Image (cartoon, rainbow, N blue to C red; front, side, top):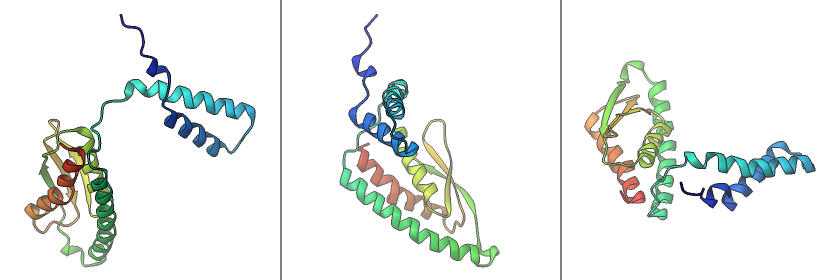
Length: 167
């Protein structure tokens, strides 16, 4: 039996300082007891959840990630206006639908980010990822051309995520 890894008992400095500071800011009490409690929590929480951590793919291109966030923010703003126009217009003009998007992404984190991106953009919401992680299902408020929507999502969101994570 191997001895326990020392790192599992010592949280990273960033996590410790972050949790310590957040606790003090949330409680807004700077007594000795609260500082000791903040210290204990900032130590115990990261150690307690360390066994839950999984390896995640590293961001290979951080500048692409920043550009991705900028595109997403722009798409959210534009989609808000489009959805408002659609919802305030005649209800007969809406053509909602469920769509299955075949995925090229393989890792859980990029797939989750893609699903979150779709859900953050008004007018679309991710509903499920297939058990084999090959297909992402989504609901769209208005679908003119299913193939065009799939192509747009793959080109605008999935392709940059593949580049960001190098997968």
